Image 1 (cartoon, helix red, strand yellow):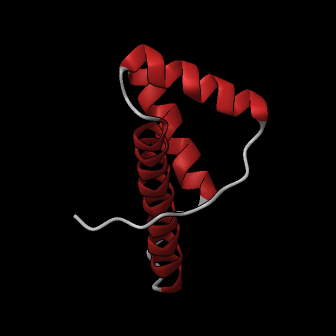
Image 2 (tube, helix red, strand yellow):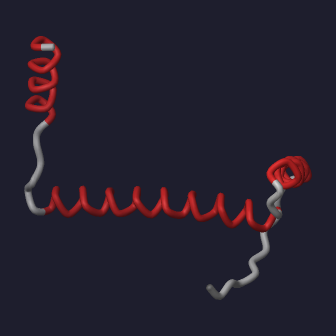
Image 3 (cartoon, rainbow, N blue to C red):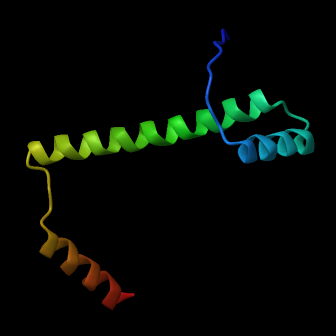
Length: 80
């Protein structure tokens, strides 16, 4: 896999914590940053996709009104 180098400003405290974690895990700081950034980007991407899906559903009229949702939750709660 091809890689690129990026730059970011972080606090000295975060850099110290990152260095300690790298030493404790036997990983490089670069590996830890790439791994954390990968997880973050995947999570945010999934969130944005879910919001876009919700907007599309709303625009297509595929929605359930609040009262119906509450009534269903109350019905499920009572039957549990």
